[in-house]
Image (cartoon, rainbow, N blue to C red; front, side, top):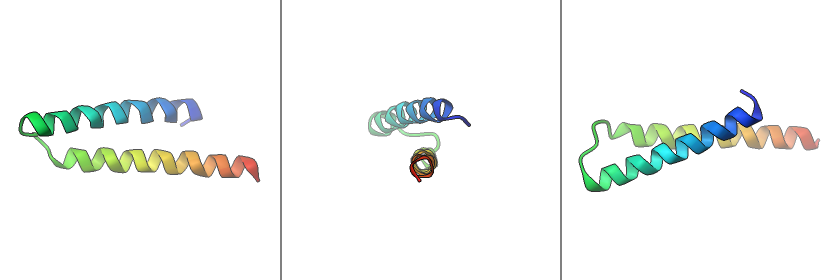
Length: 58
């Protein structure tokens, strides 16, 4: 993915995670494991962005 695509995916994932958190507080989640999946996806994207940033510097 390009840097722009990664940023868009990151923003969408954060929004989805927010909605899941709200849903978890107000009602029962269909798939509680979805919260963990979203957290991990955010971490992966941030790791890739960080790697690209450090590779561009040096």
